Each structure stands twice: as C-alpha cells, then as structure tokens.
Image 1 (cartoon, rainbow, N blue to C red):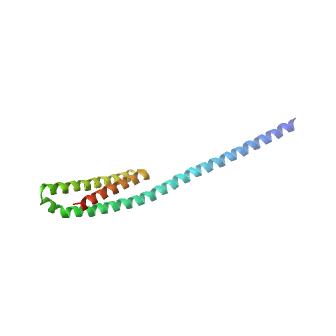
Image 2: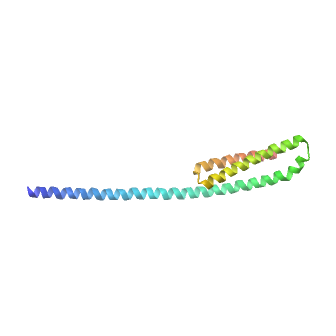
Image 3: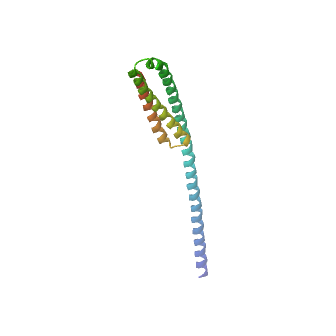
Length: 139
C-alpha cells in the first residue's frame, strides 16, 4: 500500500511540475507576443507619420505657391470693379479654407492622432487646395 501511495505522489508531483513548466512557458510566449506587437505597431506608426509629415510639407509648399500667385494678381482685381473684387475675394476664401484644412492636418499630427484619421485629413486638405487652385485658375 505504501508503494502505491508513494508512486501516486510521485506521479502527481511530476504532473504538477510539468503543468507548471507549461504555464510558465506559455506566459513567456504571450508576453513576448504582446511586446512584439507593441514594438511593431510603434514602428509602423512612426513610418506612417513620417510619410504624413512629408505630405504635410508638400501641402504647405503648394499652399505657399498659390498664396504668392493670389498676391501677385490682387492689385489688378482691387483696381477693377466691385464685381472683380467680389470674384477675387470669393477665390481668396477658398484659399483660406485650404489653409484651415492644412492646419487641421498639422494639429492632428501634433496630437498623435491615429494614422487613418490623419490620412483622411490630408485627403480633405488636398481637395480644398485643389478647389482653391481651380478658383485661382477661374479668375
């Protein structure tokens, strides 16, 4: 009887040891996976925001060029009739809207907003800049 109890005790403690080792290994695997996911996500976000900063710089450059073009014809339109002034001011309002959209992109990047939200703001700013360009071309 004592041998069977001793044998049962040995097998039970061996089983508990094996289960404990399996639990420790699985915990290490889960922690490693979570750590890898966090690092991978962080790298992806940094890469994404890098290209977003490049797109923002491009938007700002296009806006700056368009502002110079608007300023170069301002005197011509302000020397004209009230309709000319109104036409110029309407086009200039579109330029102001584009500036606001570009500032919105900048604030999203500064606040660390998610990549998809920043991308949608960039697309919106591109649309507004295109509308302002079309308004200038129609002057």
